[in-house]
Length: 400
Ligand code: FES
Ligand SMILES: [Fe+2]
Image (tube, rainbow, N blue to C red; front, side, top):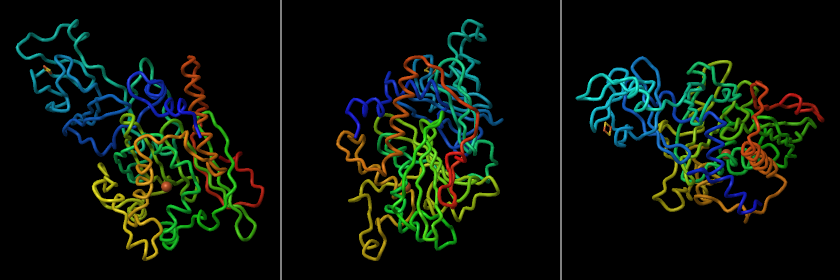
């Protein structure tokens, strides 16, 4: 359990909340799928960490990300026209280039240097990596890129969906650090997955021993299961602060990513993806995780139906959870079912929740260090999940 005060510190991001400031200042924030921002296409509204932004991609591929309000009188730039490599506000026609520089004020002479300095849009630094657009929303120099293994992969070696989840971001993060639910909530899905020749030992024996280790970038959470032949199945999920979890996918070179970014205090953007460093990501495998719906607006929850559309007939027929279309549906439904912000002071945690406990502690420690003005540490190493069958006593910490 967590004190109500610490629950508030961890979950609240809006306004001047410390967690929101920490996210903006210390982290690159994933804000959209790269493919979701079309060259020369319409600007996209982006809500992150309680604030509103606009993103657009010029025909030459460059991306501009700015505050949503036009600096003239505050009209939304989501409504703006895209003209060549610029954005034109539809209210009075002010025009800005991809760097935010003001190019034109209709009815006036060419903008003076002083107008350009005062009236231009502030451009938020961004980069594309891992099929996502990442933005830095803080002040001064951005931090190093996150230590993720898929940032430089070609597009066909990645597969990503974006959805909106109607609950606080930490519920999304915590669901991915908890290994025991895979063999419970996802047990029917696992049977199907294994029947297709995919070998994951999670449901072979669901009484793992949990071991956790902190890293400079987050937390390594190992679930260790003893197999019938005495060997150990070691599955290490890596939580990379504050948004990302890497879940093993059968080797250190492929896996799934779960990324939960606050939209505000009560909803989050959820990016789910697969990556494969050795070849293309198979659409067939991806389809096991999600249904073939709009991958840029993957609406999972049937909120208008009782129990989010749970299929009781499927359960009677042998399906465990009653959400039999895709793995992602199962995760999203249980998170949303906790309510917008779960009250962690009412929990009854068990040994299997040790990864979640460490993640909260690590977040609170990093946040406190940030508030004290301490510098972030990074060793520059890329983080990889670990998924291995090894002899008894295998020292997973040296490999993870
Ligand atoms: S509000 Fe945008 S040009 Fe006037
Ligand atoms: Fe899950």
